[in-house]
Each structure stands twice: as structure tokens, then as C-alpha cells.
Length: 212
Image 1 (tube, rainbow, N blue to C red):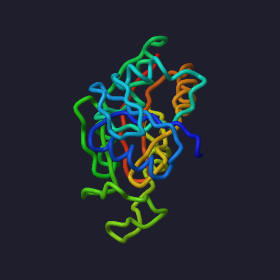
Image 2: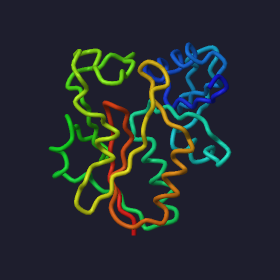
Image 3: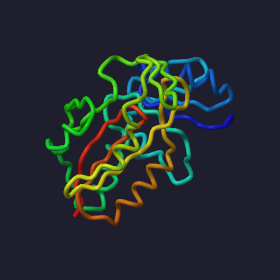
Image 4: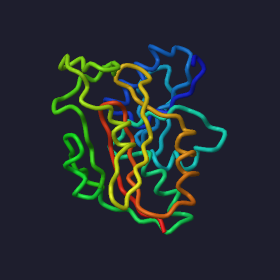
């Protein structure tokens, strides 16, 4: 993985931490940080001035296989897929059904219709190593594996789809660009209602959508 490419979206606190930690574990990687204010976050990181979704729309070509690291206050994977599908299909953004919320751990409704959920009811350390089973903060077993739990959700009229976020460095999660293209290819011929989540082992953000 020494020659991997990383696109970090957002140059705030978590974006800066992501760049520093990725550089520490991948010294020869190509790291680019995309932010509308074009902040320089690390001497060995390329800054790009752009809005996150705009940049993905114009640069996520079939030849790109960078790691995407979201550090922006929106559901980046969903916003990209929603825009792509809306070009070709009768697309409708929906609210996550309220009846689903009690089955999600510690749900919080976001301002853009998304729902955040987490195994933690406390502030996690920003350098959590995401161990296999034991939470390093509580020293207790993880209540559930979030990405697997959401993938297996059975909700009337909804199909659950999950983009899994993998740990790339302590406290830094991301997914391959190719993952988004795969999800797009799956959804482009589908009809119905869908829950669309990005999730690691402990945390997730979810949106809902309909395709006719």
C-alpha cells in the first residue's frame, strides 16, 4: 500500500489529523486535501481548493482508485450517489423513517435528513485503533459491529446498503473510490426505497432515498 493515493475531504481539525496520521503510516503515499478554503495542512500534502461533492463529481473517473477520507460535515458518499442518480433517474431524497430510530444505537438526526448512530454514548478518543472486539475506552466488548448490523437491517419497503469505512490509520476511516462506482452500478437499475449508510465498526451516518 506504499503507493496508495488518499483524498482527504476537509481541512478542519479531523482533516488535519487524518493527513498527519496517514503521512506517519504511509510515508510515500500521495495525499491530497480538498477544502473550499484551500488550507495547507501538512508540508507533504497537496492542497486543492474545491467543494467536496463538486470535486468528486469532476474527478472521480473510472481510472481513479484513491482512498476517500471524509472529514466534512455531510454524508459525502450519499451526496455523491444522490447527485449521480438524480441525473438519470426519478430520484427522491427521503427522511429516514422514524420507526427505524429505536433500532439504531444512540441515533441523532442531522440537519440534512441524515441520521447518525454510534455504539458510543461518550466522546470517543480521536486516535481509536478500532480493535476487533474490545472498546479501548470502556474495556468492554463492542455491542455490535455497525456496518454488519446495518447491512442486515430488515425494514418494510426499504433495502439497506452500506459503504464500509475501513481504518487507514488510528482514528482515520475511509473507503476506495471504486466502492462508490460499484454502489452506483447496483442502484442505477433498481427501483424502490433504500437506506444508504457509511459505517465503520462503531459509527455510521444514514440517509434514505427512493428510485422510480
